Image (cartoon, rainbow, N blue to C red):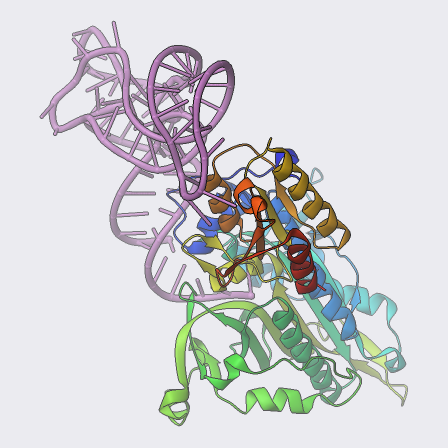
Length: 440
RNA sequence: CGGGGCGUAGCGCAGCCUGGUAGCGCAUCUGUUUUGGGAACAGAGGGUCGCAAGUUCGAAUCUUGCCGCCCCGACCA
């Protein structure tokens, strides 16, 4: 993409109503625009990151054996009345009536609807287990939206639902998602720690939150320090036994504020005790027959008797992750994107558009990076050098290649690693090679 | 939902206390000169001061109501 043809409305000054880093930078970097409290337009740069995160989440779900589908945002109140949640959910749920005065709602979650899908089509225990998911916009009319996309009212969420014949089998599904989440967050370039969590209004008795540590986190969390640096499982057989992965993590103390036990925490060696602020980016629940029982979602077991399906649900806040990743990865100059989710792989800065050699070399580098699949952004705008560098720092692409007359006299361009700040001079060919290899 | 704050040009703000025809910086547009880390000069455009009612000869300014947004807390992907 050429900057001169892109749509990147940057803000030089920080909007006064943005107080946390991710909110400030998302506005300043032209990633989004607020429409009303907790509701945002995703501008091209932000949309690109959102879609990259979504795709990684999708790929890891598919690896774990979950099957993608898509349920609507607007739901009929009927299903919610069956489970009793229409009354239980409270004002956080946005209720709508259509032209015929039918009660509708903008879905805050989809347990009721997926359970209806399941009971409509699944008859036999032989069809189990099943894990179904979708990535869809949700709406929760939060009492207090804040921190940009970190607590928006409209948000994009991946929610998976598992169906099993027995609790024992359901726990296996839980382990699959637990494992998939560890890999997902690792690929996104963040360190998310699974923590024992309160099940909240969704109910159930087995639940973990995946939390990234950041000063701006909304809640206090406590864990063993080793959990933060623990390597992800990587390639595993999702049909095999995954309990060791779960047990390895849960053997060490980790809990959110609601589940915190100070006595247990105190047993951790002092240098391994970690109490910090955390951002919840994923939450998994096992809740048994909470929805399947009232909705009569049953399958025939091997004895020909109907059995209520045992369910779990597994959410990842995709839009929240955009903010969460920035909270975990930024500096005073702007965002530092992990390579896997960066909106563009590298920025090519033509420091002097109109200068024959600078035009030619920056264009060549750009073209070759396109072919190499790096998806570069070419800054071909006229303007001062300082503006160019600070703009690239702000939007946080992993690499910057600066091409200007001064360096070209020596046959050199400057490659900067955004994360480390390290700069090296090299030939244009070497720069292309260096950046292409980083994304190989 | 309790407490606090804010709404004046695209963005950031001053003006309000003490009423008198709306200002600064940045951005934008034109021209000239610049150019290796947020350039300089000259000129130009851009506002029903959140909305409504009231007080007044006169309201951005005082009064009342409403709307919107932010922050802290309690609750949540």
